[in-house]
Every structure is written in structure tokens, then in C-alpha cells.
Figure 1 (cartoon, rainbow, N blue to C red):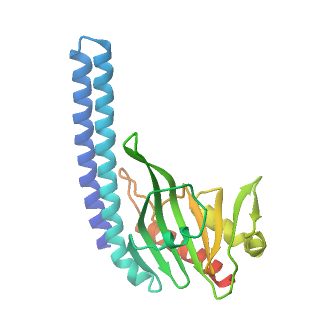
Figure 2: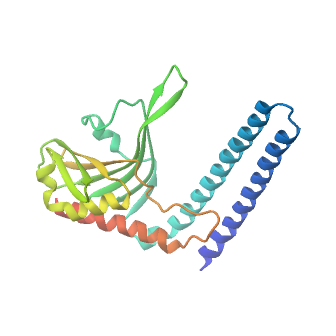
Figure 3: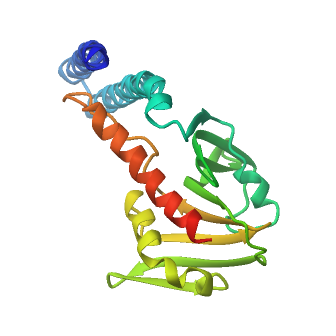
Length: 248
């Protein structure tokens, strides 16, 4: 497949960049340790070398992930004609105006979005500015699943979580979800989370999955990444979301 050859070409180029960064970071740290006369300076040299490598390696891996996603999403439109793929155009924040599902935040950032009939997945990060420290602290970093329903549902909030390998529903949304245990369990398993907040607002049902895995399968820089696994994850998410949406 052409896309496989192209992705492998770019992966190997990024591996070369990572190796160069590793050599530079290691050489700089080693030189600092060897030539520095004081122990604290040696420690500083090692620390700076590690930080430099971590920052550069993460940038390289993130860039490869973006290239990988971009290449495969070009074909995903044809493979998944009922889905749409976007970046930064979710509307999960609309629900936050009337839901108390997260701590206070000042910045709302939306990343990858997958939308289908009566559902959407949105990667979201909510940040709270810590002004006296000069940086923003994440208070929610995960995925929102929004289900559009045809029912006239009253506003409600609750939680769902795994406890002793059993799915436990609590709060006002518990009666609504009792018949959806297998679908909800699949949702939590797809994102490797043990708990989710559930909200009903304006006849829509929201699952807030904090610390959830990314929507798209994450690439490995030092080994082959089968594109089929990327497609399988999208298909699994679509199947689970559609099953949930059809039950409402």
C-alpha cells in the first residue's frame, strides 16, 4: 500500500531526528559531567541534557503523530462515509454553561472531533489560570461524548464507574442508564477510564471522560504502525456511540 510506504518513510526520518537529538543531548550532558569541577554543576548538566532530550523527542513524536493522522484521515472520509472529522470545532462548552461537571476553568480547548449521526466525540482540555505562578493548570483533559436524543429528557447529572469489576450508576442519571450497561462498559473500556460523569442537558446526553485515551491510536516511533489498527479504533468508537444513541 502506498500509504504504508509513505508512513514508514516518514517514521524512519523521524527516528533519525530522534537519534541525532539523543546524541546531542547525551554528548552535552556527558561533557558537562566530565569537565565540570563541581558536583552540582554535573547534576545541572545531566538535568539540562535530559530536559532537552525530553522536549525535543516529544516534539518529534507529536509531529509524526500529526502527520500519521493527516495521512490516514484523507482516506478515512471514504472508509467512514457517515462520519466527519474535524479539529477544534466541538460544542461541548455549550453544555458547560448549564452543567456543573468540572471544576472552575478559564480556558476551553478543543482538539480532534469525530461526528456521526446523533453523536460526537470531542477531545477537550479545560485549563485554570494560576496567575501567581504564571501557568494554566488542567482541570479536565479527556473526551466528551455527546448523544443527541429524540426524547424530552429532564436535566440530570450522575456518575458511572467500575467497582469490583461491576458497573455502578449513581445520581439522577442512573435510571436512564440501567439498560445500557454493556454499551457504557464498552465506552469506558475504549478510553481506558474507570469513571465518567454523565449529564443530561437540553435533551442531549453527555459522557465526560477525564484522563481518557486519545481518539486516534497513538503511533510508535520505533516500530511499524499498522494503519488497520487506526481504522479499527475509529470503527469501534462509532459502533459503541451508535449503539448508545440508538437506545435513547
